[in-house]
Length: 202
Image 1 (cartoon, rainbow, N blue to C red):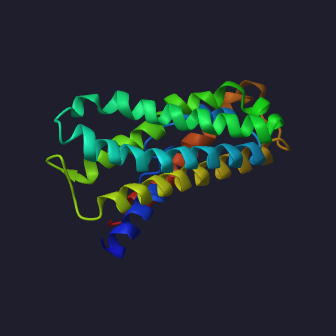
Image 2 (cartoon, rainbow, N blue to C red):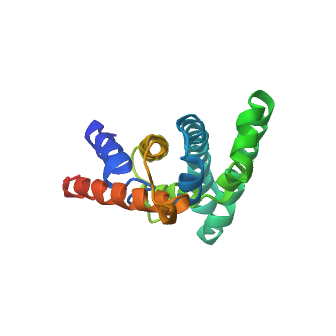
Image 3 (spheres, one colour):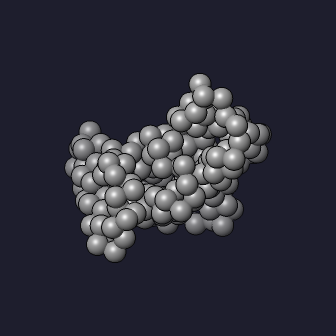
């Protein structure tokens, strides 16, 4: 395991290949929940938790079940089951301790189950840190760390987006651009800005 490789994973996951602004995964919650900063941060931590724990469990499933028995074709369905389990756990905790936040999230909280960003990280881990069905040296740590970094990248994108949209409440936005329209325009501009990181050699 190399510190340099961990640094490359961090820079790639948070900036160069940001899950929202570069890979364009998880856009539904990104547009819907990013109107205010507090719910955006809360959703980001929920996604961070699900991605991190899913990375941990899916690594074990792929390492000890799918790869040894050559049933890698079951990867998608098994990973979705793991993700759904953790989403239900997060939903129950938020519903118990923060009912107002639970009502604000509405349908977007259960939709973390089918959030392509969460599934994308699990699949990416199985492709990056395994060779011919066998884990590379340090693959467990790399998978777990990449899950954390992708969640941090999601948090960065959500905070940026919610901060800008919060400021826009004081601006005179033309009627045709109000609502989701201005959200997609901001997302496009942020995405173009993040293209500047693509010049990094990682």
